[in-house]
Length: 163
Image (cartoon, one colour):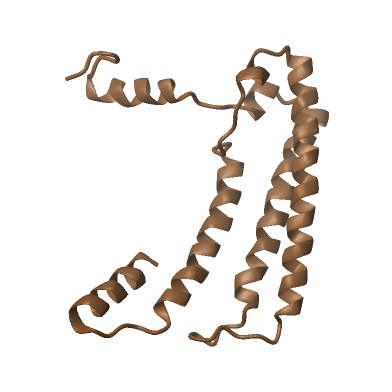
């Protein structure tokens, strides 16, 4: 994606020409990258979250909040999958103007992403409810201060002391 965009910029500014399909292909690749990256981020608990309140709750309350929030996410994922599927079917015969690729390549990744994220959430809920997984493990977050201290530990830089 980066090579296509960079190459097209160079061709436009230096040679007054360009690759007609590169912008469209970069858009398709970006969609796939973002949607599949979000599934991987969910699997690794790397999505952004505001957890100031949740961190201060007792474990039983954390568990209740975790279950409610994941059920809400599943409801939203259902809407994403349903909408993506409808758009995929609706645009089944349509093709992109520059590449000629079917427009389903732009809408179907939403279905894959929604199903992938739903499976991860359902597995986490199963682990919590039936395997008695630790709620702190499932809601693991890393503070930015922890990340900085871990990064500085390898470089020998004292935290809080500017160079």
